[in-house]
Image (tube, rainbow over all chains, first blue to last red; front, side, top):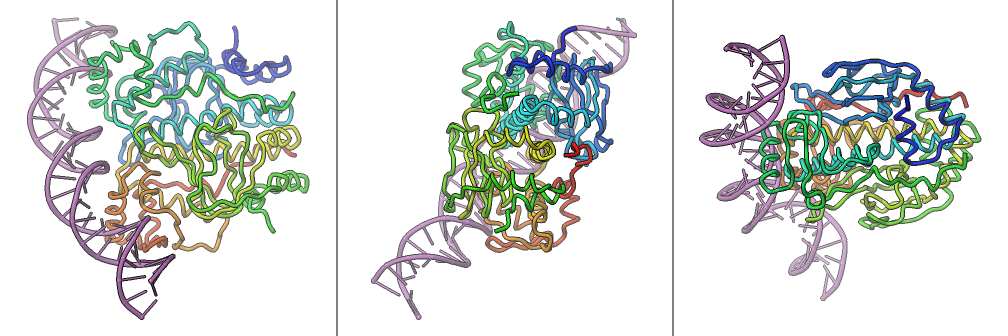
Length: 242
Length: 242
DNA sequence: CGCGGGCTTGACTCACTTCAAGTTGTGTGG
DNA sequence: CCACACAACTTGAAGTGAGTCAAGCCCGCG
């Protein structure tokens, strides 16, 4: 019943009742999607954004020769498609990794947020910009780090994101992505991801089997991959009063 | 006398007089910086944003072992630091590539934009989001493309950005960055950038000497690197009326 | 019980790095 | 106007991290 969008945003600021009403209007409509299903393709008209209610999804692109790069992974409570509001056609494709439930809403719903709720606007802006900072972290990892460092970085990134909504999470989590997906996210092949993960296991950093990952030495991994948590804290002090 | 910020934004929407007044308040203060000078460092308190009046700058990060990645290159008319408004401390460092003139303004100036000018808010949002799409293009290039493709991509990206403000630009432009800088932007070493550029020259794609680049076969380069211009057109149709 | 997707492992290859020794061009001082 | 210094670029030889190819394994599922 509870909206995970509101839950996620409340993590960062206090929302007024008016804000909550406005936000829940974004979650009116629901859509079920299957694991592996394509939600929207590159080049589609991008008139809609989505809020994720449950499940994991990801945005990706295909290169002309067929190689794939996964751009961003999405969890419950995420607002998807902000990256596409600047263009008439979607610049990336969206696919569901698991069975999922998403709530589509039109781009134009944002204009009522912008004109009615400056504080919420600032928050959305901040979230978009946080995504940008995370993308930069990925860019730097992909551009300048070894495979081992990149895998470490990736696992910690997923873990930190899960912690935003699930405070009870310890060192173990479910990762509903296969090693090909992981490789396509950090610019490696699935073969090399496999070799790297087994090496990280042998060095005592992680345990894993199927979709379950256990981080055995988080601080060492963080040091290895120079990881900074971008999700836990954000600066909202400059926000307009209401 | 003319503001290049206003010039750049006018490329996308019609601005009211009120909008112009608000915008020019962001360019009240001026600061001169020298080529190679550090403007703000990673970890500094990030209370200020900047508008670039003249010159080239770039944001970069250093890895623990000293390797560098250049995250984003900035030109006149760009708004810098949007990526940092979500955090109390700067997540990346800013350095000037050439002598430059920049206009600092406080984060809090954004809140007056958000509460007074919904249309301008939408525009700023769109710009932030366009940067995100470009970062994604870089991420995909860095993660999945060969050195040759990456260099081609980089050169076309710079050219397209210059064209936003300079419509007279043909196939030749000034690139005030050395090959180490280029390599640090696309995840290569300076040695390999040199070899790749001379190879691109020999295949008839480009000419270059010192800081001058000539693109001899733009469409072939675009095909080679699967380049899409993200700067020329953006969707502003969903913007609030005023 | 057999099929198939995902994971592992090893042998081989190659794109890119590293190292190192030139070359070029440009600004500076005598 | 020359000489010297210096940064940027070039070029080649040698090394390596990650890719490719391919065979085999594991395990959940029909």
